Image 1 (cartoon, rainbow, N blue to C red):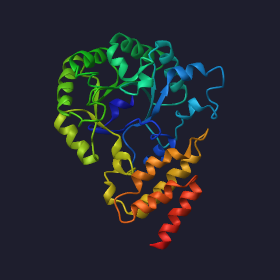
Image 2 (spheres, helix red, strand yellow):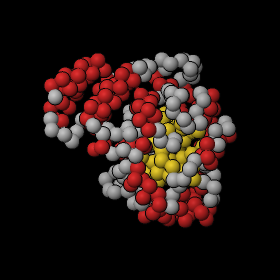
Image 3 (tube, rainbow, N blue to C red):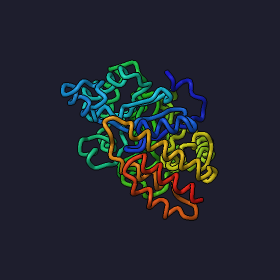
Image 4 (cartoon, one colour):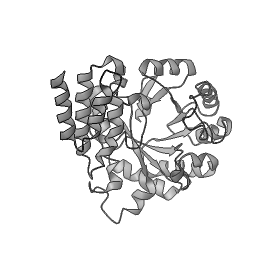
Amino acid sequence: MFWKNLHKPFFVMAPMADVTDVAFRTLVAKCGAPDVFWTEFVSADGLYHTREIKKMQDEENPIMRDLGRGETERPIVAQIFSAKPEMAAYAAELVAQLGFDGVDINMGCPDRSIERQGCGSAMIKTPEVARKIIRAARSASNLPVSVKTRVGYDKESLDEWLTTLLEEAPAAITLHLRTRKQMSLVPADWELMKKAVEIRNRVNSDVLLIGNGDAQDLNDARMKAAESGCDGVMLGRAMFGNPWVFAGKKSLDTPLTEKLAALVELARGFEKISPPKNFAILKKHIKAFVTGFTGAAELRAKLMEAEDASALAFIVAQHELSE
């Protein structure tokens, strides 16, 4: 199991919807790979219900699209969500067949449409269901099962919630150090990771603990790991505009020409995703890559009008010629 071979502290990629797709992961792998990659989350129920509509290996299946991966992304964990054990088992088995290295269960997403299904953060309120989901996923394949969650729902409840998860012995638990109620409106409470480590050491010392929330760069992540005692740190927003973050580079350290070249490469990779995603999704990356320099707003406005990778590349080329 790859989890046991990681040097501590390790640093992993956060699973982010419409961000950590195969195009972005490929770029990050080239710029400086994390110790573990994560996919965007995928509905286990969706995978199950579309199995008869199309063969699951059919690359035109939009449900399967988010489970695309490149060989440079290793080890890679596929994240799923479901409140139904049979669906979780099916998805875990499929993920194993597709060659992933692990399966992660999302028990922390605060999106209301996900919660209405009893998934994501809603799982914190149904610990017995959470237990069944972990067991089902583990029984379906030989892949290590991990969990990503929060420190509580309306309030911090690590004594009850984390203990429940630890008793099921997942390979790793990622703790977003905010409650569901807090969303991302307050700073992540890394003091709570110290409490989580104490609980882990008492209940099941074999489970790896990963902290998540507000890590600004690799140095900051190292400091947070050292101070809290966690085994690893997950970086999310720190990746925006800085696919070099796991190589230890800060965004301000990277020349603009290199940033723009990376943005064009990302756009070209994005267009290869099948079936295609709306090119407008790339706008969040444009905002992140093109900022913090004189003339950024003007260039950003032009790039936002691009409707495909070729148009974006042309605008970048014109900008560089004018410099």
